[in-house]
Image (cartoon, rainbow, N blue to C red; front, side, top):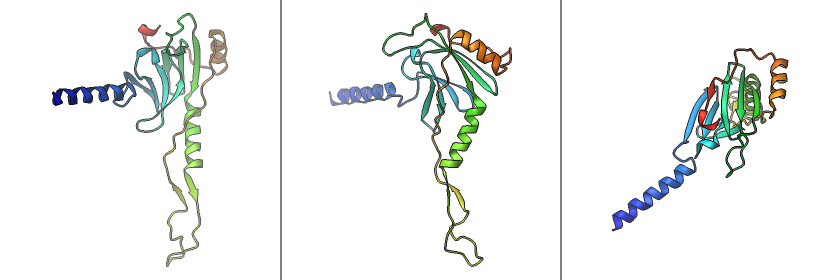
Length: 180
């Protein structure tokens, strides 16, 4: 009897951890750079997220993302808005354009500004150099979190696309039919 209780306890803890993302995601697909398509517990939670650490993600586009496309410079996405626990509003579609170069640049600037300390030691070694070593030292790995992209209507999306000269061949080439 104790073995059965122990097994039930282990399975219960495992289910709780799984529902909290403890063992991974229901769905996870690497798109480009540190950008991922993920759903934690249910497919309707599909979102575009930036990986900020080994196990940490920061949401860029909330649920429910159902189509994405990207090249080396931009990522585009379609989303049916959703307020949990309601289902996605499939009669409404938002469009997003994410400038990947801007994220790369901001992330590099953020890390260099926040994680680097400058110091000059008053203590010198026998050669007259700072005894603490290099003057600039990276002390941590930052969890850069970019600004959320702007939600657009289809017409706004087309205008923005033209304004920034997105190539015609950049389309929504990854579509999740179950969420469309």
